Structures are given as structure tokens and as C-alpha cells.
Length: 172
Image (cartoon, rainbow, N blue to C red; front, side):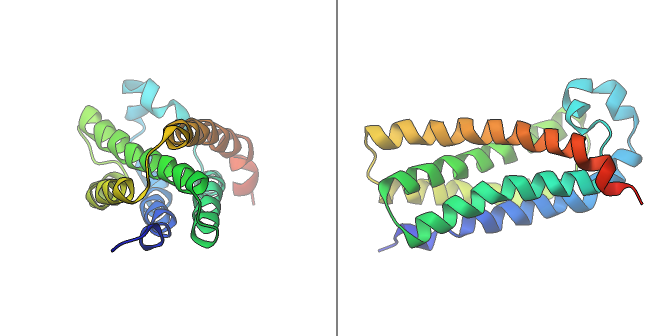
């Protein structure tokens, strides 16, 4: 019978696999698709003044809670950490859907699309299997949205780091 430790460390692995496509591809993509900033200002606003170094810093900062909660849940299994982990897994899975939606909306490949398509099915399966293992109660129902909201706030913080330090990290 599966247990949570069968799935927990897949979260940071899936995260970094996906974000590597973004780190590797976004610089080239934005340099060669400047018209997207004019056509889709709401989508591209977060990437104004993009630098690969700044984006890598943001990815690293985002990785910390994914890796940290996963390690804690792996080594110190408990309902609270499992619920937070599940909220992070749901956040990442929703992130894949956002990228797929963005690509459909602009009718163009964006760096993140391929790994979003690859990672979406196993992520959904992991969530479903985890829900069968974790006993859902009020605490779990409260902590999952707390983790999701926490990751939304963290994403905004990561983007602020990207903008604040991107140029400094890229200067020679």
C-alpha cells in the first residue's frame, strides 16, 4: 500500500524540472517576441525588464518552500506537513494550467508549455493518490488553502526579487 513518502519528494523534482525550461528558455523567448509585451501587457507585466539571472533568483527563492516543506514532511511525517505539502502540490499543478492557458491565449509556444503538459498528468495523479492516503479533516481543509495562498504571496515576493536584483546580478 502506498504511503505519502512515495510521493513527497516528487514535488521539488517536478518543480525544478518544470522551472528549468523557464530558466533556459525565457531569455531567448522574450528577446525574440518583444511584440508580446505590447499585445498582452497583463500577461507580460511580470516579465518587464527580464534577466535570466533575476529569474533564476526568483526560481531559487520559490524552490525553498517546495523543498523545505517536502523535506520536513518526508522526515517528520504528520498531518500538518502533509496538508501544507498537498497545498503546494495543488499550487504547482494550477501553475501548469496557467502556463497552458497562457500559451493557448497568445496562440504561441512559451517556455514552460512542454513541461507543463508533461508534468500535469502525473501531478494530478499524485494529488489524487495523496488524497486517498491523507485523512481529510477540518485541519487539512484549512491548511491546504493556507499553503496555496502562501505560495501566491511567495510568487509575488519572488517576482519582486527578480525585478529588484535582476539587473544587479546581470551587470558585469
